[in-house]
Length: 243
Ligand SMILES: [Zn+2]
Image (tube, rainbow, N blue to C red; front, side, top):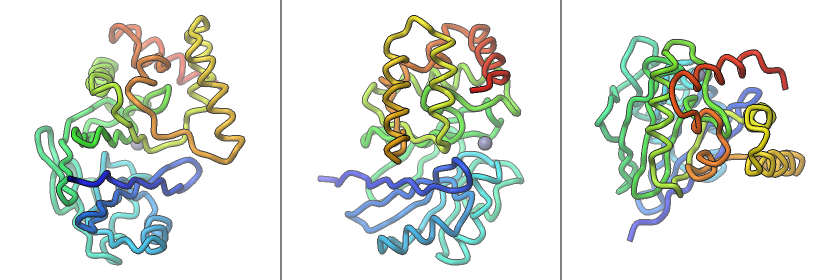
């Protein structure tokens, strides 16, 4: 019997979440995308968790800026995608590779679009995926480096995971995304209901993540886009949208 992973959101900057991941069986802890070391180290210490690994989803500094300080403080091993811009990386991750936390195994898939190096970590048995800035609740990352075709395919790969898979994005963008989604699909009752739910959660001081594959299939216009052309139209419209 393997205990469930414990996953804790650590807010950072204006709207980032750093995810602390703990396996109670082995006592091991990993931190996903520590853009800022201080809040992640503080939360781990408060819980008595010793960070042994850093997992980066892509090179952007709000995901990697704390790598060095976490390593200095804990000796953590840093795993992230290829390329010159992941600070202090020890292990390079690419499609087909694995990360491990105790007996939990995370499969690496390439999800280019937001950046070309972007990866996601899929813990199939746990029904958990860390998706960085590829998929957000009711939204997706901007296309800074990749193409609409790449991002559309990346989102479809995530959307093809089992429906109960919990998805952990790296930003609290849900309210703005929900407002855009209502305009993108005005007849979609699931989207309207989710906008109301998200507003209630935030008003109560709660976070809106994780999300699930099932929720995204029902309410995320970018996931629901039937092809890359429609996806590209939506992405352009969202880039201009002011909620
Ligand atoms: Zn990013």
